[in-house]
Length: 428
Image (cartoon, rainbow, N blue to C red; front, side, top):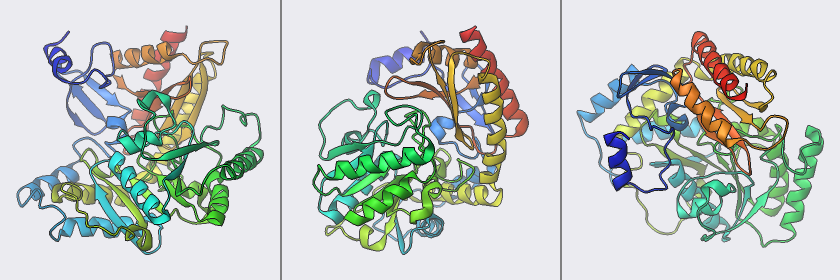
């Protein structure tokens, strides 16, 4: 056991998860690579849980942070803040929500908390609809709407939550249906549920479920849900903490795959926009955002140094069409992994879009999850110089692949080859 690991265990909570039998200390990074304390270089296919969205040590972001640090780091929302207004204007425009207002937080958890506060206040209801297999953060209220047992340590909640079918396409009672029938069955389930509950405030949903293993419904499900929700005045909250900013390639926001019914009422974001800095936030129509009848501030949400990073990062992403790169390079990476998986009985499915790819593992010859294999693949890939993530819910085990959006074709090929070798080493 390393000295740092021993110190970690002595002073930090037992429930604070660490990857690897010998946990890794990352000391620095550049581009799509990071280095550990022993000087070993790794190709990073997880980006600090989808947070290093563009690149490690991106010069444009580093320069913006350094220059802002030389002026002022922080003043709170009690004072006018030019970088915060500049970034809010861009996000409001990009969100697709009309008459949008933006509130900045320090994390996706806090963003979802704020969205729940807005929705329940606006609708005067503490009833929330959420998706099975979902994850929305680690605060008390966010845990209360998380439909993933592995990340829900308590059943206590300030909210009353009902869970809807549809977030997982290839498992569950509707898995064998075609896409159109799957959507129809989920809509009927939603209608039936609404007949058994008091009027909910909102439905919150990740367009692609992150911690749940990069699962998603057929395109159009949430548009079909929206028709039902609007009949009852129920708000739609889209949790874009992992899907936002073009990561899925086909769309800038995950909700746009379900956009036939128009934009969501509330959108939450975090992770990638800061490229490692602590930025989260909420976008909502003005009438919803302004429904609170008490004062509020944020001490650290929207602080100048994080806003400078977000502005530089978003500008770089848009000017270099990283959404297009996610579509092109992610498509190549996905096909490469699907080709490899076709020859491996322990791989049930390769799914996802853009640079958000999940590889679901099962015990060969069965449909049963194989978490031991997932852990072994992580270890083997690390030994060969590749960092990936894992996830899944309801007895599934999934490798999560989400590199920075500047990933190059040679790097995609290199990572795919390492991952294929790791899968073969574990399953053959």
